[in-house]
Length: 360
Image (cartoon, rainbow, N blue to C red; front, side, top):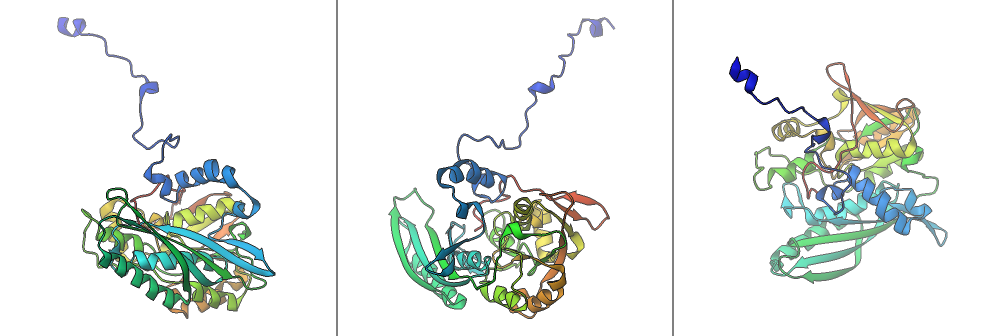
């Protein structure tokens, strides 16, 4: 007892001194999460880029800008591609460079026509690698029905790049009467996804150093303009289209909910997630809703048109796995929730950064 009495008093716990290992959003420097398509990306755009050259066209924040030029409605988009590794099951940097921009144009309902391509090459990269990327781009452009009409090349010193970076920009024509943008989401809209999610992200992760788990998954990278055209042939009144790339389905739905001031309610059992993706995400501790896709779209369509649009999608090769996964609601504006298989409800928030870097 004497020993206990002489022991020093325990230092009081002060919660003010606690620290959290989670990344802080008030970053004085660029971090990898700023490129992940989540909350950090949104803050970078809102706090840095929008004030620097903001304008009504940019403020729409769509996958592509819709411009009025010479009596025509043009969709215009640009995208940089920095995937690692350059080649992965089902695709390559070259495929992404074409399909990424083609699909951004298609998300405005446009028929893509022309692309530009800018290469940043690292000194020392093998020319055979560059040739392989360029040939993959050519084949993807032919499959998408677009022409790579112009471009540029720069070389940086060894150690100042990562082999090959590609930036593509593209233009396309928007049909008369089509008005597709995130602000058009309405309560009651059906939410449809064009096929199984998570395949691209898992395919890239499966061959990344230290993450090989032999899933046999191939990327879903593909052009979606023909699928969109099939949907618009059923009804030109498609309200919203997005291709859920960085940040996955979760990021795209959150962006739409916030832009439109509506809520989104999903049904977990209805979301098509391949078994291999479920297994891989379980192994890595990831949520399939946040895994990148490169050949999928999510659509908000009026409830009266949902079944017809869904049937048209399923009749197209790129939409054969389409599924109705939820609806747009007036409740909880700006928020996405999912009804779980166990009967509960969970919030699907905008990711802070990204689960793994260099996916697309």
